[in-house]
Length: 225
Ligand SMILES: Nc1ncnc2c1ncn2[C@@H]1O[C@H](COP(=O)(O)OP(=O)(O)OP(=O)(O)O)[C@@H](O)[C@H]1O
Ligand SMILES: [Mg+2]
Image (cartoon, rainbow, N blue to C red; front, side):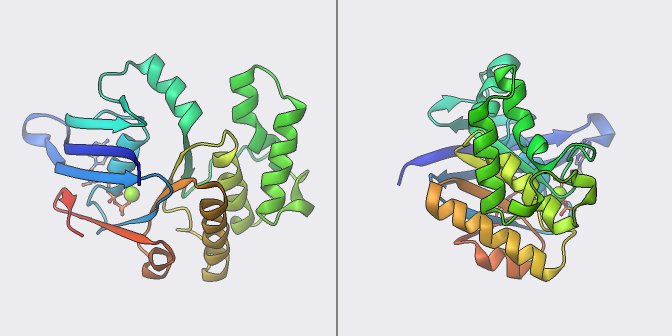
């Protein structure tokens, strides 16, 4: 398999002096293209920190990060913004949807921003993704009127809109009941198989982790399993 990304000896320290907290302590990790990986570890072990670094939203204190052959540490903010929009999708526990906008508008929004306008092709892809997420009947509903599970499926569709190679999901099913959580995971698994999209999903739920082909465990600032 080809490495989609590789990080080596990542160190991340928040704050300085007496208040300094070293969260990542030389963490190394390689993700192959097409993997579906769960990210596990106790609360405070640094899962969100790692996802934020992998998402190029924050730089580590030190260490190396190469994704798709490019040096993510040397890249400046402008380059990283472009790279992120093209190659990385995000799903968070609190989906951050715009409540007054419809499901379709929420999904198409990032692409419309990128392109400077909403194109018919983008709308068509948005409809297709929402249909695949089982939301064909809800495409034109304001997201304020959707259930938690439906909102989270809209957030997954939005993350997939620009066909990213990597989707980083931070406890995407954290506030869903078991059935909705499994439905979201099934759909993620389907996209992973059909489009080869790589997923890294942090969770505290062993059953959610078991759906993933690989489990990565973080503890004491490194990968422990
Ligand atoms: N901006 C910040 N400034 C200072 N400390 C921070 C900051 N963000 C996170 N931390 C600390 O870093 C540690 C790791 O936090 P992180 O959010 O990465 O953990 P996590 O594994 O995602 O936990 P959880 O499972 O509860 O979401 C925690 O001790 C946290 O308090
Ligand atoms: Mg977290």
